[in-house]
Length: 56
Image (cartoon, rainbow, N blue to C red):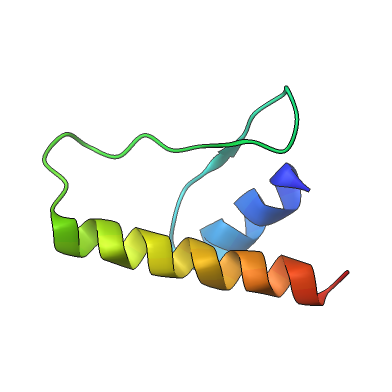
């Protein structure tokens, strides 16, 4: 499921990596990320999770 969420996140404009040890996502935001940008990332990943979940 991690790969599906990573692909759906990319469709939302967020790069996430599916990690090889289970359903784990990896993120590597820059150190200069702002709170507002983090809120955008979290919202986008939430939409990706909803998209994958509704497809099950």
